[in-house]
Amino acid sequence: MDDDFIDETISFLVKRVIMPPGRWVLEQVGEPRPAEVASLVTGLAFWAFVVFLVFALVLRW
Image (cartoon, rainbow, N blue to C red; front, side, top):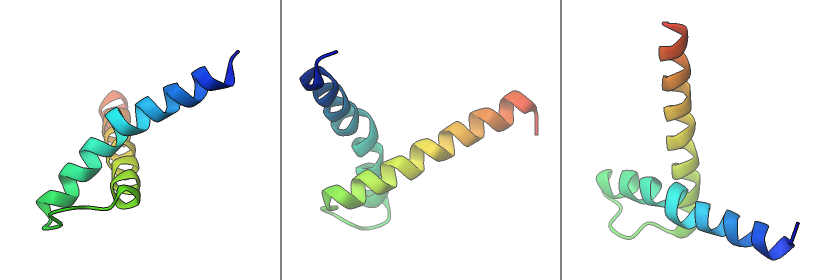
């Protein structure tokens, strides 16, 4: 498999799926222009929380 394809796919996912929710969360708590690293980390935490909630619903906790 081509390394460029993998790099582009990961870059797309990070910029279009992970960072926007992180940026939104940071804006809601009062950070008007969040840094990219902060958006990335917050976005990862956001999606981890979503996965945890889905997992809890599936197991009926």
